[in-house]
Image (cartoon, rainbow, N blue to C red):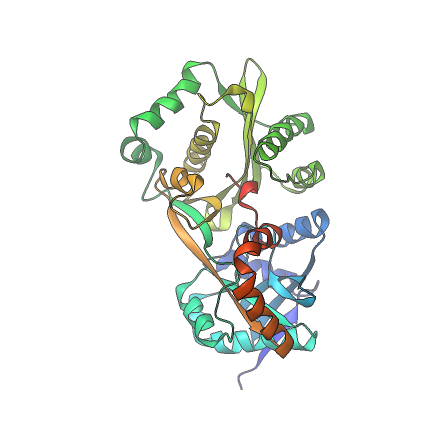
Length: 358
């Protein structure tokens, strides 16, 4: 007898969650339970993590964040994360209908007005688009730039992807006495945060509090997170924080810090990302994720990330409504207010591109 059932995360099924994430294609650092604890303790988020079973076997895991949109309470994709998608194995796609049914069932039971489901898989996207009664994606035009190091190792990037101008800008750091070292103390982290904060304020964006970085520092080991610092004459001028996920051999370039006083002649973002790529290659990793980026070829960050040879990995989100009032309110909001409000809502509820390497 086929028995599908859904469980909210608890102490008895934590290991099931972690093992499924480790062994399933598409599993990520941002699906781990350590990251869940970071989100819960750093930000004002009420999280709901669900496991879907077929008999005793996990076939999907679903990270959600409870939120209210215009007075309607529902579940949205995990906030403050580059990856927040429904995770299921390729072999379990034939169970997709039952998986979605279980998510909807528990959302209704908890009296939510809607649930928003995100995917990075085209097959799942086609299903959601077909069966969601609100097929218009709320968070449209977003995704991650991903570099495949098997196809684009550093030597190939240097020779074929970089223009001479980019190569010269990297050489400039080495000629002018800049070096890279890893942060080894909380004082180093404070230097990193100083320039991270300055960089975001320069762009009129809100930085995360220092307590978030302290929590990261105290939570993760060197096999899970590294902070590289750009120095000259022992003075720190910037840095890059890297998340590491050995099960998928993936590194995530997550936060960047830039000393704006160095001026435009130094392209710190390009140099730090280049060092991140070399670091991943030396660790024999397969993939480097450059973080979430608007799907807009005219966007300057889109252009410079693509220059490394990255491919764009789209994210798709679709809403399943449970109340007539929400359905009507959503449609009115979408058609009359969506263009003006989209950027503000996206910055609030979705992983902010400025916190990766914008």
